[in-house]
Image 1: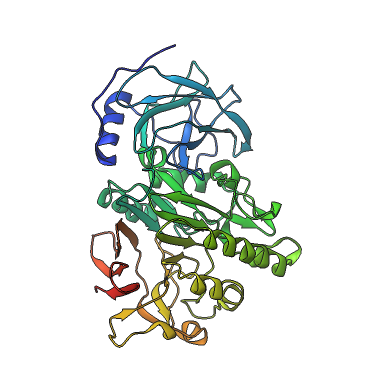
Image 2 (image 1 turned 30 degrees about the vertical axis):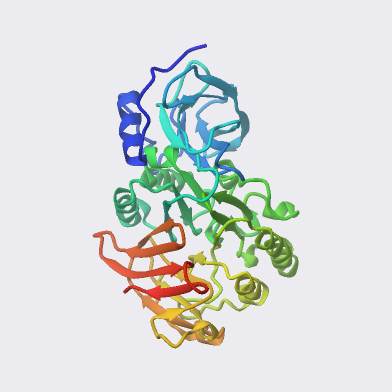
Length: 428
């Protein structure tokens, strides 16, 4: 069995990417945005989480023609490599897709891997498994990328990854593309994220309404983002509602695109997730909880309403005191909380923090009216502002910053659980 030369232990994701580049030599780029055909070597390599990312890792990729998929991996510290078979999962946009899940991994350990067919391989990439329990880490949160991806959104996305080179994962709040099955737009999305960022960190994605065509979820979605397999018992929600536990944080994806529910069975769509969400929150062993979905609880732009979403999910989010609710859809920036969660200090509140953000250039006019109709208040609201968000989790504190492409901080707060109950304090 082939081996890979040993290397020193890698301390950070930024360092791991440098190591991967050195090992790979020349890394082939993705297809030129707009090209609807896959390259002959594996491309669109993407890490997506399992339920237990401390001991397992899922990877997805595609090629032009169908092959016998394999993943070869080894500990970055050296040793014999292991080759496992992947599975062919389908076709879309001129490419054949594959998925493999690596199991039996050691927590908090750097691994090196490549995908291929045993003859033709991708470059070598690296990833780090989660710690087995709470440990400090940071993650990125990106709102709608969606439109004008290459020229308008990609500069913000690249600024985010440059700024947070040690981020462990990215949360994508839906509308990654504008047209659900446009392969050229998916190529642009992968190019914006970048080869190493896609293949070396986990991506927690929740679908947006633009990942649907009528009642049909994009054929690309389950091929890129299969989910963790622990969602509601509803086939229509497969790969879109799920959770993963990462170093003391339970990340939960919900599908709030009720207007795309098959046969417009909105009640079944939302109730199934409500019941499942209650169970997942009641059984959460982690000190932190982050929930993401696309269409928000409190609409942040004119002419929109979050009434349906909050009718089904708001009470559950509040009852279990979810820490962050990360959303998109409204093409503006907004952050707030229930008025009932105010304290005597105007800069401090309790309860969940609700955020709407947009990373791409498509913009709507923000308004606080739906927040007010839902019994909430806006603490920060911005129009015509593309942002990325960096969230740092460290013990009893979670620190959040929203930034523009030039690094300007436009919103910030800290959640502190170290005193008498949770306190959310504005920093901006």
